Image: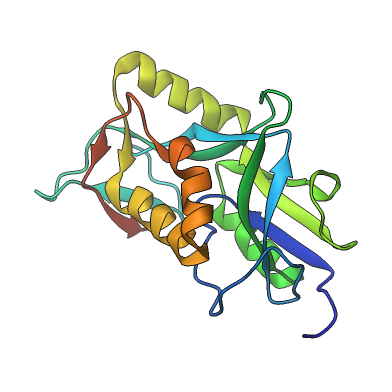
Length: 190
């Protein structure tokens, strides 16, 4: 094992992907599992599937139609009870990767969470919901047009399962969409 990377991104949803090895909770330059204290994971942001944004995405239903939905994604919120933490994967990043993620994560802003976890002196970033993305979810809930893409939920669960049974168990309750319907939606890039 080499020296720790200078920067990591904390993935707690779709950014939890198979890193190519079985990470542990021990700091490792290739990536490691950690908890961000004082936060909770939940369905907190949405994108408007009716809008085309260059370089972004949209979703279609199995019949090929493009439903007028707010498609929901996981978020990291600070309104957690004391002692609460969110588990996830700290993956090493460089400036180019951060720039690419900043463009990809349009519903989020990048925040330094280094002081909320043990990262052996490295800087750790997390993507947290933007106010407008959180408002889109509220609007979708009010209008009953908010939904979770089944493939997104499946990918997140698979990512945590790859981290180990204990990590999946630790996050399973926060992945429950509750009153949000889960729909079969195919993702398309613009």
